[in-house]
Length: 471
Image (cartoon, rainbow, N blue to C red; front, side, top):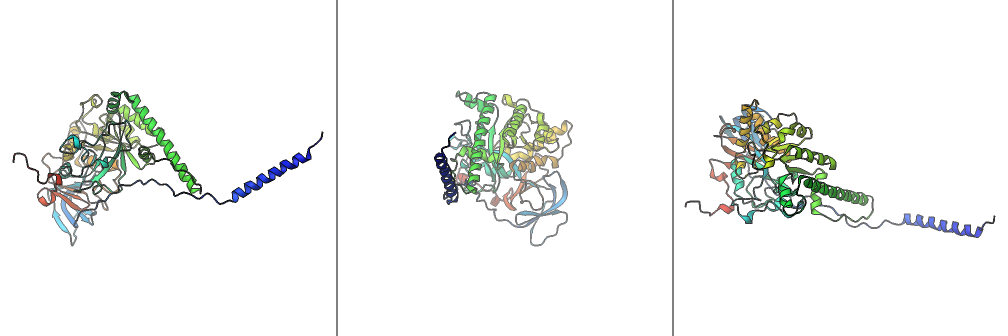
């Protein structure tokens, strides 16, 4: 066999050149990186500033802490806008002392489901900005961009003890958009009311609403299985979007010069849920649908959050507690459509009875938000008629601490405890009596409402100069 030595030498020469070339390439300086692309997750930051306040000692009150305790003849000291001390016979200098003998003191009331500002009063079409009914998935819209701060409903809610509230988009769509949590203070701008550092909420909706709205247009979904297909498609897209951004971040950190994924406002919001920064608030009445939504959250690795209008929550109270889901419920709204039919008036109490549960009473109404204390009272009295043993210190949780937990703000508000922001309501008597009034309301220790002092009964600019009916 003859060997072509000249050919071998030529190939070895080529190999040698290739190795040298690779070596030189490895020594070349890396490609210059473009400026890093980042997503501004807070482009409309809160500008809220606490109103002028004074250090105050409330004495001799019946205090419901919001965490299951009732403290009789108790004093609460507020300094620098926060609860400083809770105890008996406190003696402090340089503070305003308010004797609350015979009166009750609770944390500020929180409504997790409101449309004030996006469906304001007067109820006219030109103000109706709460439901972007143009596609099954409108995760790109933010309720805060529809809010009219001059809605007189904010003041009437304040007179009912509401100190914080979440404004949600409506429930026509599978994904209705982002909700926002507000401090209930007079302001000319939404940002002046925005609760600093409160997580955004994503409004989702189960059942009849989305399938009716889009089925009538011959657009998916027209059935409940169509609803779930729509959710799954959206979460698949969000998962890929999140993966693309993570790859971009990793490659950029490694010194490469990757091209950033194209921004998508809809997927930005869904990615925020997958990253645990945005909380789900899901309009969902029926037990089996809530269970499916919990399964869906496990498929795509996010938390299913709070179920609103959970008329059938009592059927799956164990499942909700096991998965850490809050359920926001009405005391006696039911039967107005088929998916709201199978209600019991002990619904809230049954959910609340399970260990590690999170039962919430919500309004979804510009009227009942003014009387959430009485909405909670309905549950307590009706449940006790049927064998429960609920007390005021239990019922107050549903509209204070548990509501704050649902919104992700329970570290700062929702209870009367040392270090908490001083959101306080002074009630004329037992707040679960129909005769009780919120006499004074404080946010961050600043008085924002006083039933007996016009200076603390703010009116919106919209109402100034309006002629009262009959005059």
